Image (cartoon, rainbow, N blue to C red):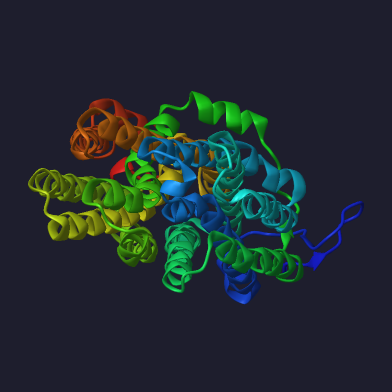
Length: 460
C-alpha cells in the first residue's frame, strides 16, 4: 500500500498525486477515501456555481417585462441557446481534466464564469437588443461544461463500488445550483431589486470557488486523454443508447429548469414574483434526490431503477397534460414538481449505469481484477463527456418544443404530449437493451470462462 503523495510533479505546477489506486481496499481505507472525499466536496462547490450561471437566464427572463420588448417565443429561444452551448462545451471540458489536471481545470473553469456574469451585468437593461441578450445567454452556457469536467475528475477518484454514491452526490450538488440561483432570484425580486443585484451576488462566489479549488483540490498524475478510448466509445452502441436515455432524465431536468417559470408566466398568467415562488421547488427536490437515485442503483441495479422511473415520469406527464387542458394551475404545478423529482432520481440511476456497463463488457472479454476495473474506468470516462453533452441537448429540445407549442396552440400541452411519447420510448429501450436479456447479450457475457465472475447488464 502506498499513500497518495500530493506534491508538484517535475515540470508541472500545482498539487499532483503520483499514485492513485482506489480499487485497492487497503489503500482506500487508509488514505484514499479521505483524499477522494475532499476533492469531491470542492468539486461540488465549483460545479454548483457553474450550474447556477448556466441557468442564470431562467431567472433573468423573469425580470424582463414588457419594457424589454421581447415576446415569450424570444425568451424561450434565449434560454434554448444557453442550454445548447452548455451541452456542446461538455465535450472539450471532459478532455480538459486529463490535459490540465482536475484541480487546475476546476480553477480555470470556475474563473471563466466571470465572463458571462460580467457581460450580463453590463447589458441587463431595457433597450438592449435581442441579439445582445442572446449572446450573453450563450456565454452563460459555459457553466454547463463544469458538470462534464467535474464528473470525469470525480469518476477517477472513486472505486466502482462507490461510484453511484459519489457521482450522484457530485451531480446532485451541482444540479442544486439551479434552484439556488432561482431562490436568490426570488429574494431579489421580492425585495424589488434589479437583475444586477443577483449578478453582484454571484461574482464574489465565483472567486471563492476558484480560490478554494486551488487550495483544497488535487490533480491525479496518471490521467491521460485516451484517444483510443474516445474512438472506441464513439463506436460503442451503449454510448449512444445511454446518451438517449440521459436525454430523458437529465435533459428533462435541465430543460424544465429553464422553462418552468416561463410556462407559468405565459400559460397561466403568473407574475414574475408568483412564478419565482414555485419555480425553484422542482429543481431543488430533483437535485436533492439525485444521490438517492445513485444509491438505489448501487443496491438494486441502475437499469431496474431507470426502467420504473420512466413509467412514473410518463404518469406524471400524463397528469400534466390533463391539468394543462383543464387549466388547473394547482394540479399542473404539483405534477410538474413530481416530474422534476423523478427526473432527478433518473439522473442518478442512469449515470450509475455507465461504469457498470463497461465493467460488464470487461468481464465479458475475460478480464479480471484491476485489469477489468481499468478497462471500465477507461471506457466509462471516455463516454461520460459524450453522454453528458447529448443528454443536455435534451434541454434544448424541450425549450424549442415549448416555443413551438406556444406559437402553434398558445399553450404547452402539445409539447407535453410529445414528452409523454418520448418517455414511453425510453422505457422500451431500457427494457429491450438492459433487462430483456436477449440471446446475443447472454452469449457475449458468457464468452469468458464460467469460473470467472460475471456481471450482467441487468445488474448495471
